[in-house]
Image (tube, rainbow, N blue to C red; front, side, top):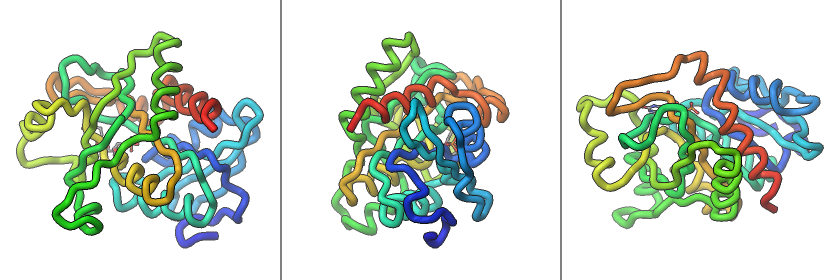
Amino acid sequence: MSVHLSAEKGQIAETVLLPGDPLRAQYIAETFLENPVQHNTVRGMLGFTGTYKGRPVSVQGTGMGIPSAMIYINELIEFYGCKKLIRVGSCGSYQESVHIRDLVLAQAACTDSNINNLRFGTANFAPIADFSLLMRAYQIATERGFTAHVGNILSSDTFYTDDPKEYERWARFGVLAVEMEAAGLYTLAAKYGVKALGIMTVSDHLITREETTAEERQLTFNQMIEVALDAALDVE
Ligand SMILES: O=P(O)(O)O[C@H]1O[C@H](CO)[C@@H](O)[C@H]1O
Ligand SMILES: O=c1cc[nH]c(=O)[nH]1
């Protein structure tokens, strides 16, 4: 076991889906995986391993925010040897053209977190998705008629902001949506030379103020999961 995960070495697959919400991890395992076995309950951050179309796949909750997610991602890569990590999360839209329940495939992730200033000082590192996973995910989404947007997102350290219009400065530069983990995932994937992608479903809209329910965020978003699983299967 690693510091925050109780699985034995070899019990977690090379491909891992990473929802922030541990109950979404359970839903994914029970809905999409064959023979899922729970491999983690430490801190209630549920993790499962099963098969998808006969191939081993794990799903591990990461909690909310870059610091929490990076703990799990670090241990998954360093201790368990995970090689394809796909975040399946919710996000808030920053653009009129990106509607609730649409998919956002994060080509890159800006951040207001200090994680990379700690590494690179005043220089900026650009956290980006694995191109093969990104391309395949986009192909699968469009083949199935899902609405998918590819572009830049913001991984923010804050969910609640003092200024409700703060999103405008990011939106002006084409940022599609906000969530709280992808920049951390992409940074660690670059550091360790593994493949990563963030696929998010729009759960709420910063401009129109439309939103999905907590139950939807926990239990639905099936299009995103299908795209993540099939893209992972198709990319070596
Ligand atoms: O739905 P998840 O995957 O948790 O993702 C988003 O939702 C949480 C905030 O409500 C943050 O973790 C954010 O990134
Ligand atoms: O981090 C997030 C996730 C969903 N919606 C938001 O506004 N922010």
